[in-house]
Image (cartoon, rainbow, N blue to C red; front, side, top):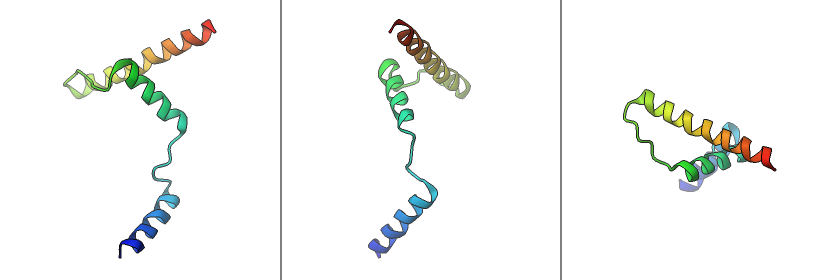
Amino acid sequence: MKKRHRRYQKKWRKRVGHGDRWPMTEGIFSDVKRKFGENIVSTKKGNMVFEAIQRFWAYDVISSYALQKM
């Protein structure tokens, strides 16, 4: 039973594309977490989203600055 389920699951993953991510996306998420930490301080949902947006904006500014200096 488990083997049959695994086979079906593998076919489903391939068909749906589950688990496939663009490699660059993972690198960006890792960089943001490394630079700014994984935790968000805000408690309200709207502020959490704003804080995450700020982190990615700051990452973009830092990355752009670094590329200009190269």
